[in-house]
Image (tube, rainbow, N blue to C red; front, side):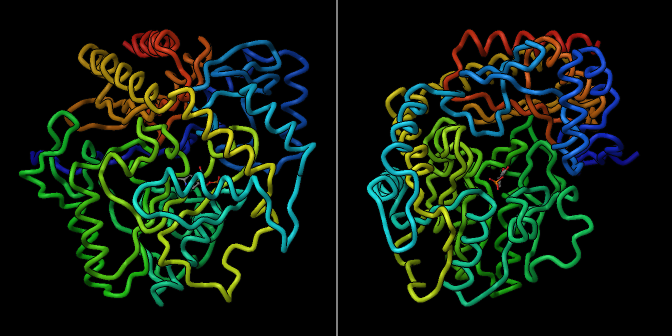
Length: 465
Ligand SMILES: Cc1ncc(COP(=O)(O)O)c(C=O)c1O
């Protein structure tokens, strides 16, 4: 029989979404066992009034309190939050941020059209100072999806072209811009025509290489693959000839880390064919990967950098687009004239969050604790055949479960059982693509907390034997 060299074919995700499913039988069993009368009533009300949608409603439990790395539900169960929608870099309810926001509400809660304010300008200056290279012009908006839309609009205007290249399986937001760039059926199905010219290519994914190359224990074999994934970006840029921008997360949210040299090659290809490079650092920017910006690991500066999520400190919604100065070209047009573009309250949330990350050395902590976690997980991989691959950077960590290591068949049902066992024992995280346990704790996590969490995970994986 021919040995398969491409990525594992994925079993049906029936009942299991591309993330963890809100309809899985394990979840139903967990809910039946873990809700009291009051929380059941609240969940039923939620179920009644919210439109149902995958990954959101129905919900698993109701939250009463958030603090540091902890979620407490209305039944009184506590969970270490190793997901946090990637908003909780500084931990939930950071007292310094609470104080700063209270003061800002008293001082100046909004900034109407035609007026600027200290806080928004301070944030703009701060972002220009800390972002890599010559990124030095900003626009703010309330959410990542809108920030991505602005970046596409700017790339179109700057290049006079409309096409984009992005990756299958990516997510860049739920608006039509992000949806068109994204490559997940869960978001794209039933939507009719999306933005014309949104080209997709297979992404880097060394453990499950879509180009059919073999990995060496999860690492790329560059001598054999010659960066086929980066070459494909160049190939499509050349064939299309008129692409406005390549848009991607520098480390994919799965998470998959690119092979070394990938982004340098893509940067060079973008320059050769006149396309902009847009980095979506909405979940991972501000230190998650152990550098303030993920792009710094790869020594590549994008033309446009997009931030969101943790920028609001886990309290307020704010996202930002930071660009090279030469992209300041649309003075006569409204590119991102959003109601809250210079809101001092959301700007205060962002500014104080960045100050906390800096003052508490949280980026260094993410690198150190993340490195420790990866070592422990590699050791677990040696002992549990269910773990096919461990990957990540800093506190963006993936544990890929497979039913057999040769074929790398995704162990989707096992991943769902492991998740629910972990929830039972007080650890919450997300699964990606059904079988990748995705651990993204806040940057404040301590080594002891990480060890506790990995102990829970290990017990849940051991129970699969
Ligand atoms: C990589 C990426 N881009 C964009 C977005 C969209 O951000 P928002 O939900 O704030 O619109 C997300 C959100 O999950 C994301 O993970």
